[in-house]
Image 1 (spheres, rainbow, N blue to C red):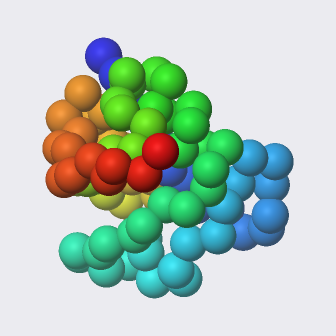
Image 2: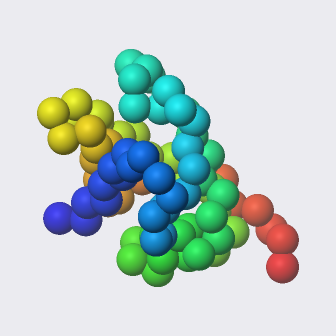
Image 3: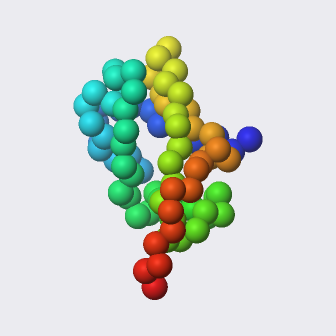
Amino acid sequence: SNMFFVKSCIKKERDSFEVPLDLFTRTKADYTLRSKVFSEAIRKQTGWEVNGTYRMEGIFLPDLSIVEFNLSKGKRLYVSNLD
């Protein structure tokens, strides 16, 4: 399967990025990922379009303090025509 996991960490770690403090405690949360390096890695793995905007729904697993995303279920919202 094409799964991706986000785990909370207390300090800045290699390949980590800052998220809102309450992201892991809210029952429903939105987060816009703005890391170009990370976004490019996801795009290459999934085959998503370079100028596309996608949405993924995550499932919070409180026992592990992680959010699980199924990348094969990403929904394309739109593609910009910026070239």
